[in-house]
Length: 265
Ligand SMILES: NC(=O)C1=CN([C@@H]2O[C@H](COP(=O)(O)OP(=O)(O)OC[C@H]3O[C@@H](n4cnc5c(N)ncnc54)[C@H](OP(=O)(O)O)[C@@H]3O)[C@@H](O)[C@H]2O)C=CC1
Ligand SMILES: O=C(O)C1=N[C@H](C(=O)O)C[C@H](O)C1
Figure 1 (spheres, rainbow, N blue to C red):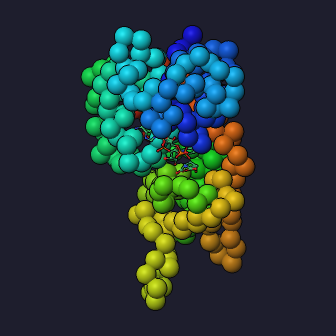
Figure 2 (figure 1 turned 30 degrees about the horizontal axis):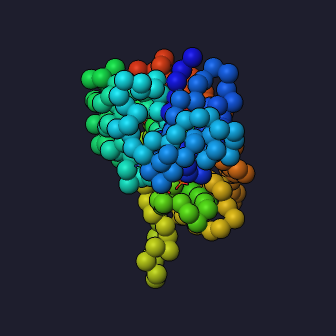
Figure 3 (figure 1 turned 45 degrees about the vertical axis):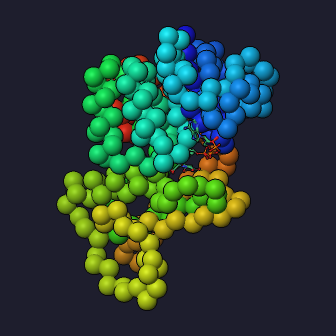
């Protein structure tokens, strides 16, 4: 039985992860970390029965003698790098859902994990449908090199573009490079800065932030007198839970740092 703790356990994702881990027969919900909920019961904060586990105020409180096997982090792009360094440095596996880590930061985490025998998964999106959207988009890019992404999220999201859009663009760019295809030149000149969105290499991303949305993305391919749209919708945060639970169980089998849940499927 793997003992799992949740960092950011009082947040929108963290509360769902506490419930999902607690409901799983092969995992043990061993604790939560969230400064603004410190001392409150981890189960009660998540909206289930009391688990008789007080919420820790910081990672330092849980990385001692009774440390868990795995920590799942859903906090914020501003603190994930420091959290991950601490967790891997303590020899604890980490499942990272929090967005915003750069390639350089992932490389540094990989080295810390290796030195401490701790594995790391960085997954910008845990929903199966979103992983398939990315896979299919990368496959299509060789036939349709002209492609743009529109991602739509709730207005409490910290970052733009989303981690999912960045990974989608990376996979598309890699597929285009492998197939040796490029987009036609974009001749548009912006009369308002930002009108054409942001570029990740050859892929343009547009970010929408509005109340009412959860997490959605359209990958739009333009062709010869035709267009093809791949769309994914997370209708609630429950859509991420099977992926998070699977990651907790599989992380022990995946040494090093893995970027993307597709490598665990
Ligand atoms: N990979 C995936 O599938 C998904 C990824 N995400 C990503 O997960 C991240 C979190 O999203 P979301 O749950 O919506 O955000 P929330 O703001 O709802 O939750 C974040 C929680 O972390 C807490 N927190 C802040 N600092 C610390 C700390 N030092 N230690 C422990 N906890 C801390 C916050 O407390 P306080 O409010 O008091 O600051 C808050 O309760 C984002 O980066 C988001 O993009 C989201 C959905 C799916
Ligand atoms: O902040 C969110 O909500 C989400 N964040 C992740 C991202 O940035 O891609 C995953 C999902 O889109 C929800």
